[in-house]
Length: 287
View (cartoon, rainbow, N blue to C red):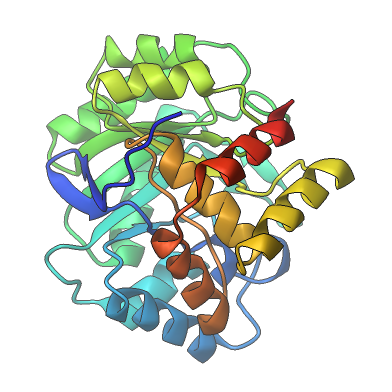
């Protein structure tokens, strides 16, 4: 268990706050179509920046195209210290299903779509999202699609590369093709399959970005978290986020919300100090 809760971490050549923002929930239900009120979504984005957040996670397949368009409308021209991380490797069909999009043509198109919809000449970070399975990381070679992104990086369209929904073996395969600066996988108090990967990436100063901070909790696990949160006069999500920040200094968080009030609650988790007794109790969640 890492004890460092430093405020920032290097994401490539950028220094970002460890508590960022994920834009996925700004799209409509099922991350498909527009939100009920686009102006509310843009208000949330403006509050993100006003709160000092300088790391936003998005993708052009959220909506599709919706979240990137909202980001551009709300925040462009972007502040110099803002880092926007996007993902490619998936697409949506007419019913909103998530489908792999790994061909050379699809990846090139996806990068250009992100550039156009975000209104930038170069993307700060592009993660290749592995779509071999809907049930988490699955082994399979990423060499061919990752090499396409490496080419686009060489062309000056992408500054940095990362991976999402991948195994340790796939991380090593990709690093033989081009440097990566982040890995984005499912990880939380209850789902800790990536413990070894997080520590290995920390030794290389590579960021680890967990998604679904409360995903996959059983009722018993939730009750432990709820009990700790109640004793600390905090929300369960705040405790879960604070635990992740404490877990390792290379962990960057991207909790998402479509509510300004919920955004403020999430950001307050950075100020929450977990006593050792609470950490010991939270360790029971993973057992």
